[in-house]
Image 1 (tube, rainbow, N blue to C red):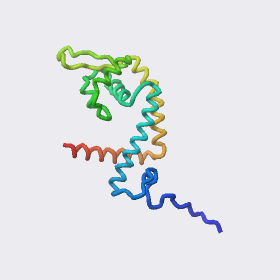
Image 2: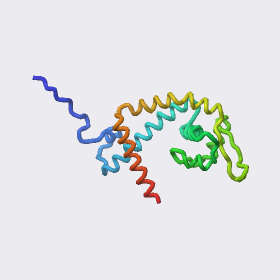
Image 3: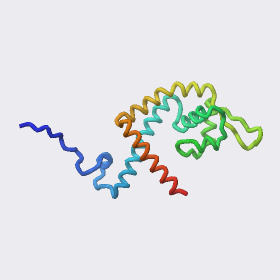
Image 4: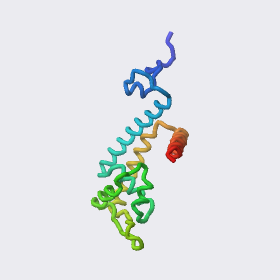
Length: 171
């Protein structure tokens, strides 16, 4: 008599990450396993994004700055741009230098405070972003495909909760 029973999970007592890392002993805690899952997932997703953006001659940080400038619609001070980036950018001035050299941004010194430098996006950068919009949206959809809309909302909620706690812990 044949059974309709599904095959056993190939990793019955170990999580997938433990198996992927070929870790012989279990993680020391659920918190450690969750943290390492988050870090490994971030790394894999970042590699995919950087690879795609590299096809357009951009890094993730450069793309982030150009999107900030496009979204604002007018030049911003460098420190304001830095405060809006997804990830901290320690060398924001060097990053702006490279974007300017590529012709994607221009700098303007403030007429009221000579210490403040504004950065604006150029037409070639706007054109580049318009070419990237669809492929980046397709990548996001492809990566999130296994998650339902409800799962995506829950993931957002959980990540926001972690981020809020992490920023409160720094104060």
